[in-house]
Length: 187
Image (cartoon, rainbow, N blue to C red; front, side, top):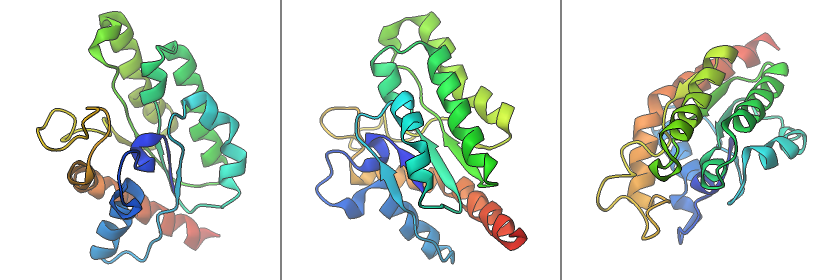
């Protein structure tokens, strides 16, 4: 499951097949994994919103979850302590069922000041370390500052940018699939 915000939902893309869940599923299948990546992303979602809909989302009983949130928290200048608490609760609740997690981190825009940026950017690695889950440091890595990879809003990746994100995250996504297979075998 891709549990996230507009970056995972494919905001601004004309074809849902160009969105992160669809492109990740295609890339995993090309590597020989028999998977379905369930899209569970809502544009505009904050970590607080994600936390409030978590139980409903987990009703789908995913074998593994990629947690991709934080961009909207940063855009709203949410206190990093709130983001950290929400992310920790989300990850630990998913883990309660034994479900493996991959956190796709986010970085604050520099216009919020150095102090906010440092506190916010540390949230995702700390939650990953504290919970022992897989961690991809920055969801938009390889796309955000590269010409031709982003939509005109400079916030959301275009189909080419999504493809780059998927390629960079693929090794960790494969580890997540392996963890899910081990967990399923123990059931």
